[in-house]
Length: 515
Image (cartoon, rainbow, N blue to C red; front, side, top):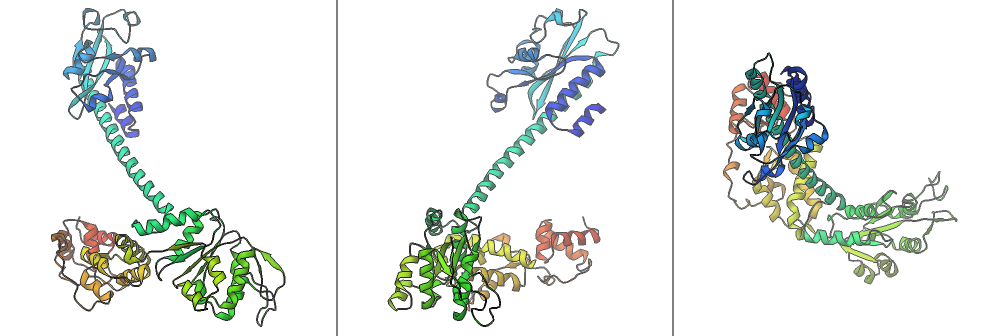
């Protein structure tokens, strides 16, 4: 028994444990040719259906003998034990007409009197197998002693099989979960980190993916704050250039006098202060993608040079005479109406046609109402991590986010969420507090609060979200016990309500002698 339990402590693999158990039965007890006969898997699905059982684990039997050991319910001694769930003791196998000698022929056994012991193996209250062995009848040890031990071993065998079943079920569930996560990861990877599944977003992404492997210039159109940089990076990641640089240039942030130097570089001495040559953004993006954000801000004089670079694939640095050949994919973005800019004479028509090869319109957040929740939770998680906070939004607050018009689009949503995380007075932010951050002067419409949301406030002020140093005695044992009771023993929620981390809360419980 000690050896069997030692095996169970080392491994739960049934093949190893059960075979070694049968080996110990033979070597230590003389219970020879031990076998574990198990019903086919189909029996577990329908206990009333006709089923067969076969030798699955054995010691002292050849492979051919194991293959012959197949039994129907009620067939022979083994089949009867399997069908009835009752043990069977055959004092002399030669005198028992029901003994089949199916696995081992009589001539392969000792010539003296041989007994056969068979005990049921149960799993979840049902007989699923038989533990059987041969025993020389003339033993000094009492037969009842062997039966008592075999009963324990058959119970252990059932427990090993049950553990195998539980592990298999958990493994199956984990495999399903992993497949779901893999699909989600694949989806996120395929969507390049862009959060959301609304039809307008998927339409824009579909257009992007269809043109990503071409060399055509992509023009991203849409309001400010719709995520043009993320889309531009998605074009780069979906193309064959993803191993090369992705250079982003905000044209509205470059002084007009530095445009040419920044984009195309300059030679030494090209202007006052140019003490050494510098490669421009186009050269730095060699082999990759350059993203010109707010391309409508380019000065007219520079638009001609940009057009020449795009058409010929070459550039000349400021102050230089040598042409530099470049291989760059251009993605441009603007929130202006470039056709109106062309009509007003502020944008070159030929450059407009050169940029407007593949226009993709990015939807505003007002058109992506289904994405507000996942985007808000994404920004909330990111802000909590960045600022070491533990803030969450109530369902009423999320409903208020849905109703907001979002003139600033995704950028506004991200900024609002970060502001809420930084300035929230409690870990749970409701609609009233959120309305102040959204600039609403009126009280937001009342929404039906769920009973779970109506948690009584603690009788002491909540801990500040910027966690200053607090001693382990910052909360009394009575306070800790009260808040734990309010949250039905859930330490994570209790810690959250106090503005503490789970580790800090658990440490205070320990110091207070509360378990």
